[in-house]
Length: 337
Image 1 (spheres, rainbow, N blue to C red):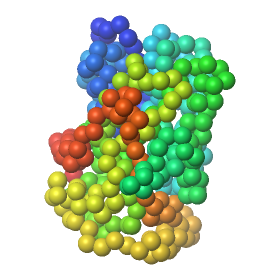
Image 2: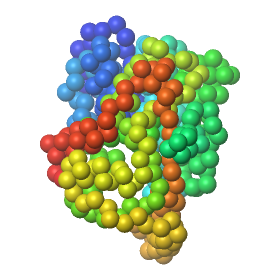
Image 3: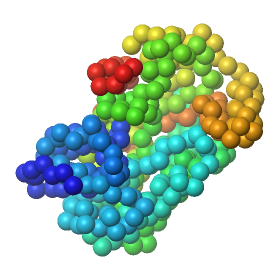
């Protein structure tokens, strides 16, 4: 455990504290006067947060409920941002364990520690996506089971678990559902790998789908706002701009340089290629860069509205080109790209 002096009156227990969202949450929370109990995996070097003041680093395992008890005790708030975001392989027991069982562990411990509010971070894919003209909103059914993707399924089931616990046991839970986040402190990198691929001129084609993009700092700001003004039992989609993959890749190239896609692949070709990848992986017993689930997802539009979060949480809507630039600048300064 590494402790930096706490000087504020409110404390937040945060899981996944060294990830892209978690790191931005740590910066946002400490800047706004909260003390953060930052829960990270054992043995990791949290380069994005370890020098922050007003922060306590705690190592543990989200699958070991006992390791949660001591650091959660006495915290005013809980933000659960830890997740296994793997989509390749599409099916894996560890993804379900981390995303669903980990959430169950946290909620069970919260029953004993009695925080003022618990925020569970999900994914916008827990709701039905829409079109650019009529984007998806909160409260719509889950339709992503068609992808046979444990990440999406487990995050949806964790969302259901959180809302069920609120309804049956009265825990002060609300859920937030970010779209595709871009921004600084992406040490893995996660979403930043898209920017790197364009910058290094490795992206010459795009699939015919699209998604919603958002600055990770706006997501962090909205989540911290939700600690005080978010409505218990509610869900909030945290997003910003809907773009096709062609539009998004071109915006990345215009912002940081690199290759603009010159071709949109037909959906049939993309799906056939995905099936071929799965077959090769099955025969060779090794993972390729893509799989059928990823290709199927990339052929669909995943467009969402964040109007509820803008209205109720005061969520900012920073231009996505700034998110791209800040992600790129941070990776260039801190990583070899």
